[in-house]
Each structure stands twice: as structure tokens, then as C-alpha cells.
Length: 422
Image (cartoon, rainbow, N blue to C red; front, side, top):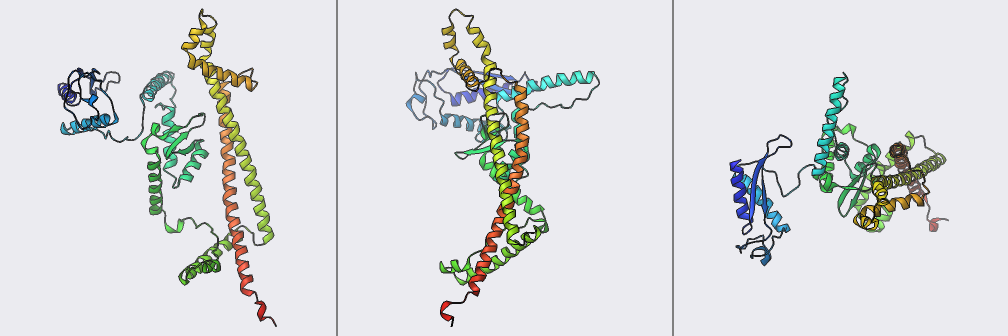
């Protein structure tokens, strides 16, 4: 305690010169951790002029009678100063200049503690009755969201696969805006930025993890178990030669076309589509399945979005309904309404939404959540059907184009020039 107090005093003298200050040191008491830490409280007004420091950029930062300014340069200087002080005193200190791991706010921390306390109390009652608790560790909604994203991130190799699997398995939507990722779990309207969840879930870290998964999969999986190459279109060698490609490109293109043509034949033989009519019929069937599944997915998306909006208005209405009821019992309702203007604004918006949609009897919140979960589960099934049809449709269309390109080439090679006909 004495050593920490001395370090705090010296830190205060070095970084807040000219300000009256109080330095207080004590151990944690609320969680029985005993962690010793220092509080520094300074008077905002500087009582004397001090020597200018590198992080001071205006005269008000060192002149007497001026207020303390907490600038970005000042905050960075304080973080560096704390790290250097701990290093010199041989104390453990994390890197304050870069976020590390999960971001747990104070609000989430206390929510987890309250939930764990309630869970322990409930488990104690179950144990007294001779029953086995099913859950011993309480998880906040944000912690559940992190674990779901981590589970998908550890088994995917591309960002498209990562976002699609998150939606299929957990109903979590991912979007990128201005180079930053945000996540929206089912039951929420607003997206949660990666910064509020974890440093590991930001775009750069996610792409790094996906690339590492690719390298790890290549190192672990034997060559015989590697997935076959996707069918690609044949190269029009004559058009490329006319565009100026050389003989080296022509040799490569012939080998490329031979490989792709063999893959096309294998695919068509495996699916029993060796005739042109059968191929056209199968493509038409897949196109119908693809369009039908996509229509259902879009309809369910619209329904889920309306449920989210209704749920948001319902929560706001129930939260601020007591304020609206209290308004009728006051002598000066206008002053009370002005005092709670923000609350009444969202409450009135919820009432207007119910009136516009003809909702005289409000639905039950639990039934809304159950309906949303049912829709989400059904949507995942249709989405899987849609993706499967899309992949097969893409392969067969490419195969169809390859067949047509091959026979066009054969026709050109067997065509007789007009001037040679006698």
C-alpha cells in the first residue's frame, strides 16, 4: 500500500504539475480480490505556470489560471507514462495502447455478477431439494454472442463462408461499414460493433484468423482429401490469339481446357445428364427451386424485420407506460412532460406505430420471441436449400457453356472454306 501510494504521488507530480490534487490508495473490497490501486483527483484549475511538456500544444495547457484539457495527446502520454512506470517498478502491466481480447464494459461486468449471484442462489435451492443444477456459470448475452462468433470463426476459411455460417447456425447477421464489422444477433434491431465485443472480432483480426485457418487446413488435410477444383469455363483460344496472346499462352490454354473438359464430362456423367434435353430440364428445375427458396427467404426476412420492429415498440411502450399514467395525476403535466421529453417521444412513437398497424390488443412478448425463433429456424432451412440449388445451378450452367463452346469449336474445325468448294 505504501509503495503504491508513493508511485501514485510521483505520477501525479510528473503529469499534473500546477494542479491541486488528492492521491488515494486502497485495495478492492467489493469482489474480495485485494487488488491495490490508486485514485488521483485533480482540481481542474491550474494554480501556477509550469514548464511546457511535449504533449502540451496550447498555452492554456501550461499557464496559470487555465483549466486542464484532456486531449488525445494527453491521454496517450498518460497511458505511456503508466506503462513506463510499471516497467521501471517491475510491476505487471498490459499494453494500454492497444485493445486486448474481449471488451467487457462496466455495465456488462456488473450484469454478469448479478446474474451469477441469482444463479448460485437458484442452484443452492436445487441442491437442497436433491436436484442437479443444469448451469453453474452465468453468461451475459454479449458473452454468448462472442462464443457463437468464435465457434464459427474457428472452422471457416473465407469471409463469405463465415458470414453465411453465422446466419445459418445462430441467426447472426454480419455487415461491413467503413471498413468495420458489426454483428446483429436474433432478437435485436441495432447492430453491435466489433469494437464493443472484442478486438479479435474486428475486420483485420477476422481476416487474419481466416487466413490462418486456410494454412492450418492445408497442413493437416492430406492431398487425397482435398476438395476438387470448381468447374470453370473453357478458354476461347482463337479469340485470345487474335487479341495478341503468344504460343506459350496457347500451350497453357490447351492443357487448361483439357482438364476443365474432363471435369465437365465427369460431372455430367455423375448426375446422369448426358443428353442436352436432360441438362436443360435439370437447369430449369434448379432455377425454379432456387427462385422459390429465395422468395421464401426474403418473405421470412421481411416478417422477422417486422417482428423486430414490433418488439422494439412493445418494449418501449411497457417501459414508459407508468410515466404516461402518472401524467394524468399531476397538477402540472406540461412541466413533467417537458422534463421527460425523450421518454415521451419514444412512447408516443410506439403508440403511433400500434395505431397505424391497427393493434388494439398488444401481443405477448414471449410469443413474439417464440415466433421469431421459429421463423429463424425455418429460414435457415430454406437458406440451406437456396445455397445448395445455387451452387449446383452455377456448376451446371458452366458445364452447359463448356459443352456449347466445345461443339462450336468442333464445327469451326470441320468447316470447309467456301473458296475451296468445287
